[in-house]
Image (tube, rainbow over all chains, first blue to last red; front, side, top):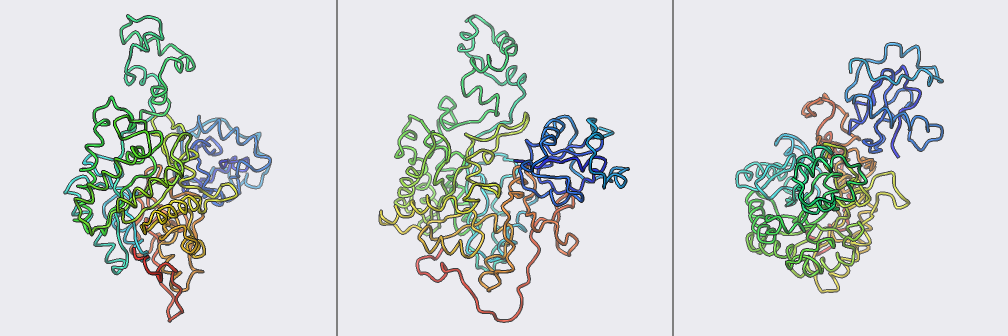
Length: 111
Length: 448
């Protein structure tokens, strides 16, 4: 298994997780992060760091589409290994649960 | 591992402050060649630095901790190449390639062009298994590459290299050396059932153990009869076609007969089943099933990461005793509390218990146990955060303490300032409490 970043991260992107990853396996899209499943070593250190529980084990029910998104976009997006200011709109979006239609396939700006 | 010499010394001094019976200092290269982040002992100029290390450990442990140096030799491994670069530059063109392409008069350049035009499955049919392995994983030297002079000559070259290194360890103030015969290194590869050398150093067990014994003899001759010389080797290679516990039993008795002062077991950790690295990265022997057996983590089977080498080690020790030798046997693997350590000693699995990850999680854990403060032990979570850092050649720390009190006086941090390099100090609670000692400390004959 590995861990995956799920829907809750969209438009939030708080990046606390990237600070603690021992293998720097987070990649940054325009409005969310993903985990590179080929680099993740399942240590689970990032999971409790996420303030909105966006990081889940890939064995959890309901995360199937996010496993695919993490696998695909980790190959396309740039690596991120240090914390950034949160996404500008994050406070407006943190309590919105169904956000998958807002997923952006674009890489992080400036990359 | 840690980056600067001071960091390395601080790292070991921190373990020593917890007063374990012994510390084996990480694999240290015996050749005078650059070797990335590895410690080295391949030249006399390394002795003063290592002497600082042994002095710091002696001081931090109040002289309670014996210090051994693990001596290692390894063969070359390259990063996984880009396909084009491999076919343009690295691959040695042979007549076998020409035959496979159906034209024995092709110039090398033409062969390369044609190979590059093939798809992966066609290419796989033309390349030898080893060439294909070099393309997919990066080239790796093996002890069976008898066409390479420096590989062929290993049996002549290695005994004096190990002997010189052991003498330097002695000069640097180590209490002894541990010859590294485990995992994926040169000596382990000689012991492996995959070693098919036909020069008397491969094939049958008696031949495969020959060089490890010759190395031992050379070391013993150089350091004298009273210096501690032990070895670490695999109780099971845990790979298809590899050595099993039957081989390990045979080797263990042979080592005991050769007067090895201690015998320490490990498990797996081979290149043979390692995960394919990304292009530009090197294969790592702790990524496949045998790597899992070596450093199992919390996502596991019903056994968990605990004591996976106990039964094989017990078999080895039993055979050594039956052969009439009292060589101390060291077992490790997921040992994390008094109960487990005590059981391994009490049931005859081993004479000495080793613990790496638990000691990283809490360098003071033995001290806490001996003072009756077992509840204060920080127990390893076996998530292998530490091992991941090591794999990425970053300073190894433990997730359980590396972000604690970063601004405390005396705390040294990683270059990015995010992690402390050693566990925070522990202050024992005051008063005179009844002490609990590890059973091993009270039993005669367990004096290492």
